[in-house]
Length: 226
Image (tube, one colour):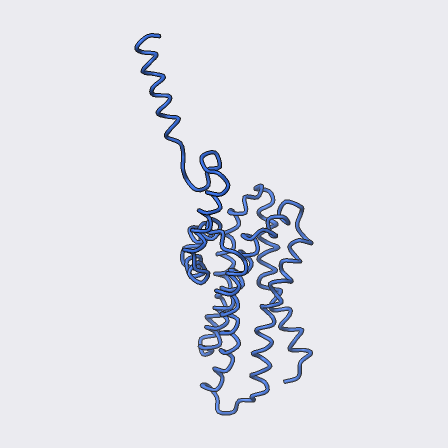
């Protein structure tokens, strides 16, 4: 073997050593190392922090959510449920703007608002699995798919709270849900769907996220007496 061949062999050996050692490279890490790395990412992730990040930097935020591996239970307990509680409490802001407030009416509105989004989440998940083809349906059942729905609804809850606290500028705040649709649009790409499926997926998801809570609210306000 010539000196030149020996040098080339040495270079190849060095290149083989310089492999990607990222936590998502299955060729470099064993399953245990990958799972441990994902758990570390999950510990660093904050459910509410991810929501804020997605609302102000959707592309990086959705990417962070997908890579964090944050469980759906942590998203619910750390973000969605606390916001629902805040939404229920925000209905009592009427006491600051009016001296003639019907307590029964406020309590009913509080319960209706909470239930509309709470059951809305489960209804949306079911609607998506019924209306979509097999591959998008499977994506919705994954943690990222469920988290996508929760984060989208959480942004709507925040906008509802702001509207309750600042009713005097309601004509402006009514357009805030458009921002939720924008956030959802930016997150569709991270489902890694075929390009032809993305449009239908976004339309069904966006219409469900906005329409289902409103439909449940309308049904409940029709049934429950004020």
